[in-house]
Amino acid sequence: MSRVQLINVNVTTENRKAILNQIHGAFGAVPNMFRAVANSPAALKSM
Image (cartoon, rainbow, N blue to C red; front, side, top):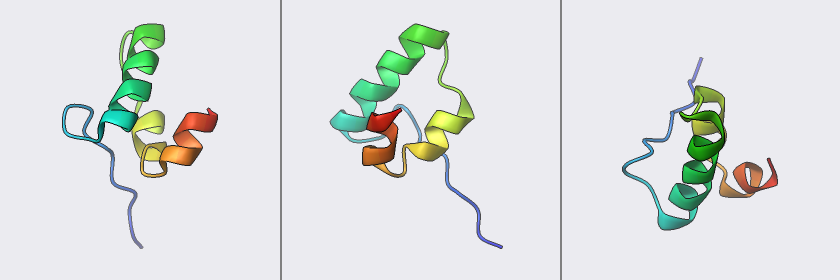
């Protein structure tokens, strides 16, 4: 069974990083659910 890779917040594209930084501001951290969804920037943006 394959696993979903969690995106490293510090090593990612600027587009993803901007969205993940907004999430960090709202929650105080980036939950793993958002790091997993970040594999698809379109899905991450829709959240």
